[in-house]
Length: 251
Image 1 (cartoon, rainbow, N blue to C red):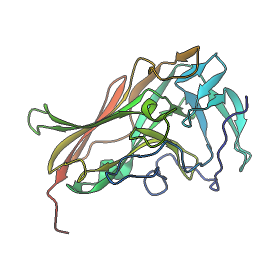
Image 2 (image 1 turned 135 degrees about the vertical axis):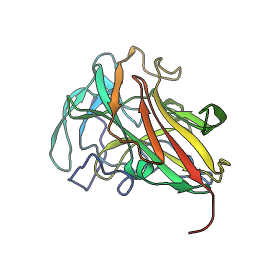
Image 3 (image 1 turned 90 degrees about the vertical axis):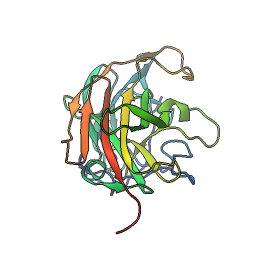
Image 4 (image 1 turned 180 degrees about the vertical axis):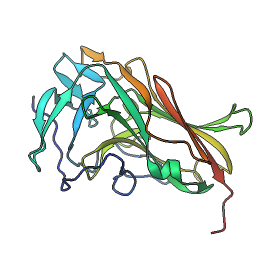
């Protein structure tokens, strides 16, 4: 089986560039994904480590199609790349724009996460990726309200529009997980919020490929540094940030 291909015009790739060059999927009125992942169709330009392997020879790609393990090439640049299907340790990296800036209630906020395997110089992709937004008490950190919750698998192999979490390939050919958080549509007022990215342990029920095996993806840390208004955390299966939405209005 041929590896799934997409097309890209950019050659340069910088790991720390996110929001400016990222291409989001079609957004609905509430700012959520509202369509399947990868609708823009850029070509992968980096090694990839798959979290799910089918029959020991293929990984499940963000389109839901199978991608051959082993060497492959970016058709536009000719760059030789590698697709892995084995347990890996990854570093989680939130987008700089999200970590380094404060936002007001009512804003539309782009959230992005990359899982990076430094040993193989590869981005990691898993259909078990899970994203949640919660409002929390600023003192006790207890959950006040569950705002939004979704998984990558919910949007795969689904007919028509979907409100699922998604993985995308941006203009630089980088693989990332993205969500468009419309704080107004989701009734998010000023206050503290926790955004959590988790790698679920179990395979989802909707995988259409027999003999699919989940590979261990272990988060060993984060690339981000906490700021005065954003705290960054991680465990072996999750990474999360705690941030405060400012009052709306004003400049």
